[in-house]
Image (tube, rainbow, N blue to C red; front, side):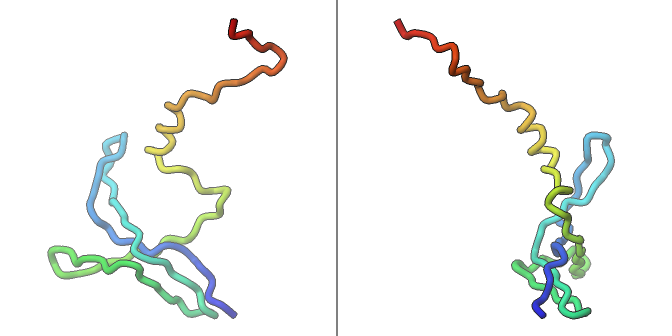
Length: 97
């Protein structure tokens, strides 16, 4: 049986404040993790840098179902700002002249 994708492997790259002023961690995806017949396997696509103490911490996030995933807040704001596409009414066409 092939290994099953379980989620992303991320490392903390910094901190930021959300809209309510709460401090949050900023994550960067560095790989993926898999379940291989009860064993966890990790595939790194990038090598994370150590923190000032020389430690490297990785966080494993479970995958989300496609219907549960929502765009990041920045993407939601951009989508809301975009004007809706113009609607064409084929029954009423204007003459150019």
